[in-house]
Length: 168
Image (cartoon, rainbow, N blue to C red; front, side, top):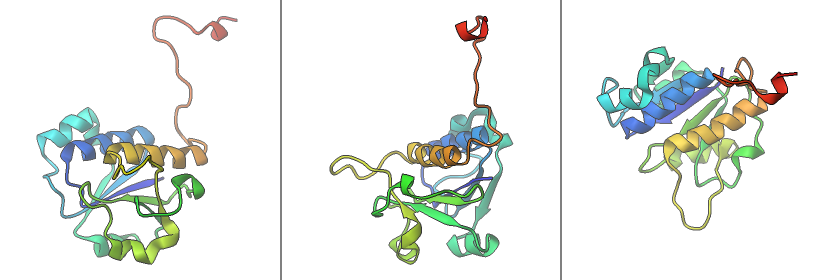
């Protein structure tokens, strides 16, 4: 199972969207406090829709608590400060992909000790960063692709009609 880690997320709608993505992909969500919202906040549930109750979510009082409760975890850290692209690494099927808070990212004190595991999403010019929920989706789906979308439904069907290729 892949794991998404949010370090001190601030915007409930982002975390709700990420929670929905985690449910859709069978991914566990880890939230490192302090959070910029309550877990029973209406905006969080609205963005996560009716999926929030199906989410495997864990919370931690700080980064050290997260590390203590997940010893030996392989953690990739998504940051605009990295010189390595998110497509340059091979994601293990049980790895953790960490994202920082919307206003500041992952603290440099954490990044500096994890340089080899830092990855970035390429962007044009002086853009500071992408939306957090979009960034999670981009990197998570690359990790899922690398792991052959294990246990995921990879084929869709029309509801009322049939694809021409299915008629033969």
